[in-house]
Image (cartoon, rainbow over all chains, first blue to last red; front, side):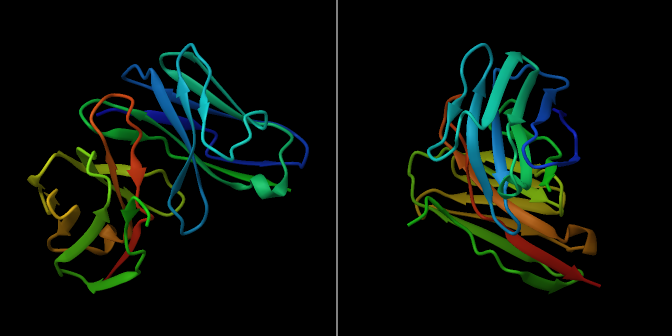
Length: 114
Length: 112
């Protein structure tokens, strides 16, 4: 089946630094990927839609300068959290449409900003 | 009213029970209906998806969609402790770029 690989699975960084999260579709091409944020016991909150070769589309209230998204190839999208602060600590998950009506998710990245 | 409503639970059942998980929705444009299972601190895993109304069965799992009532269900037969997880429903319209809308998930606990 379709596999989306997300790295790193866990990262701890100091406040003010930047963190890059990678999302790769391993066995299919993904022209569109999605980035979500999830707080404990809450549903997935869509942050942005990443389109290969073009600018990402951000949801209302998501700072595009803080959450930089790059989708440089059909199999790779990256999310960079710039100048991270403790309130950015969360679980970040990517997904891609993988055929039929299903969407395949990465395993998620737990970001802790100290 | 949210587009997708899902009771967060928790739902606690004994091993072997039949579990019924449900979602309601308001957007009549939804055509694809999905159920995901999410273990703690992991990404969601697609369990089943259905297109339009009807039933779909896969092993111990059965998904039902009633578009007239805007109501979808996931049934789990012979539930096991390993089924303990959060189950999220999701739905989207037709077309490759139609972004899925998720419910908040129902926490299921199957105790031995």
